[in-house]
Image (cartoon, rainbow, N blue to C red; front, side, top):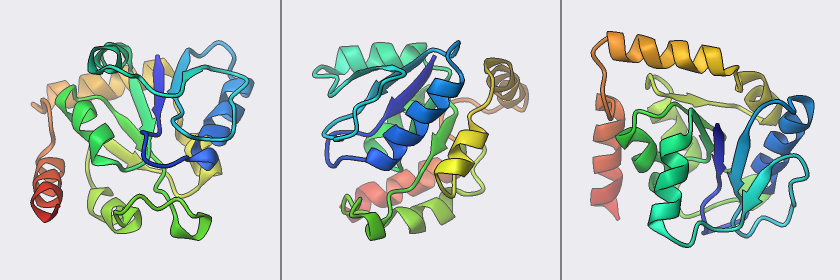
Length: 165
């Protein structure tokens, strides 16, 4: 299952719309979305506004084979704890999508991380959503290379962000 999360701090219409468009073109793919206060309502995937409980969120993260999200620490932490591949679209101030952290700078820091892929825009994001087989191969490669849980660069970055708060 592909899990799309936008968190609860601010709407992210651009991301939800892009994944919904991809879902329309790929109806056989299972996608579940947490859309928060987003005003765009998806037509091609199941969704909830909020998880309302950590156990419900954990169940969805445990079932996911890919997380699509912004660069919120609240979303990256549970993904990194599960070694869940992440496809991220940074929020942009030009669209009024700010959440208090400069996601463009964060994206530059995470660009070389193995488990996270940064999309430059919605079209790029749609082209990066891969088949389940490709995600499975990616997970196998990661486990064969001795990686488990958080990657070193993400762990360092998350520690830095926590200390800066």
